[in-house]
Length: 470
Ligand SMILES: [Zn+2]
Image (cartoon, rainbow, N blue to C red):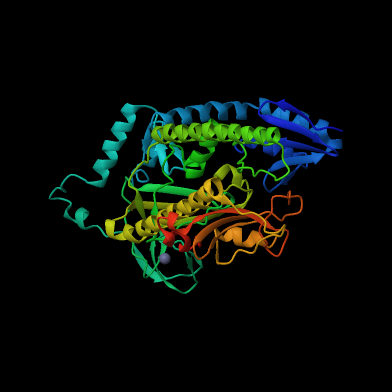
């Protein structure tokens, strides 16, 4: 039977041989529960979905329909819309004093956003008011004479030996039974050596889930702030930007290499292939400019929010046993990670900055080498057979990339040959299925083809010996 798909509300239902597959947004808890209750299974992996044996299809369908209409879900939808509105309007109250004032904030209509670790307030007025009240709570007016103790109130940390194992609230590492800890009823336990740092209200919060490939952060870690480009927590990543760029640019046309004229090829056939090649080049160029324009536009729309380099001041992780997809794990179970960061100082950022500069310089050199290789192939003198025999190029062989070196074994790869007075560009053309006729260079396999220019025509021969390692 061919694949059939139909849609039931947000659920895509697909029949695949003896299974029925269900795909729907991860936040549709009611639907997930309905399927679970029918005995559906969750399929992990690249294309995660729920499935059930075909015999139970009718039962599952009824259950989904019921779940879609449940008042609980309707209410949730309205609630979600309201939360989205507050997020887009920036009605976000993030302050270290919100915990102390939580009951009053909730009573005033604030909604706790566990993912963003902040309250979403109903209106700009209430946001302003609660910002002010949190500020007052943080910096109380000078204490009156009657309560001089209030100013020197202890910080709330007690020191004793841990009775149970646990997790440090500063570094996120394990605390073993019997270890000396500092304990605070609000923050939890920390290692004796882990300094407590107040997280400022304007800290940048990063979050990630193990199912999305996040491994968490460590206190003191310095990183580039590429994760804060998009507004909502779930979308904060460079990868998301790339996805939008790809979507805007459309499918990438295949990369095509300049053809070589076969020795027995007719003038027309060659001209036609050359025209096809030029058309393909034009298409690719068009796509590239569309992609670059899309990136400029999207990056401008979501400017980097905050400093370029961050230093982690607190990091936590928590394990989610079930329903992880609703909590940003990216899987049914796994870890969620959170890091609070401040701007890194210039000194802290220097090593990363240098790494990035080195990586960019290496990439640029690599691009120059590739351009040189292309230029020789395009403009150079073609290597011809001698007495009907493939020739052996005498000189130092330098691969274009490491990958080219690896693919030589299989009849592929590109390299330079630096001879006494010439520089050759060589394309290995010995794979099964390649057209071996243009081959004029002996390789030990089916052969390669190539072209050369005088060595004196290369401005900077050092370029060739740039390390190809990343
Ligand atoms: Zn610790």
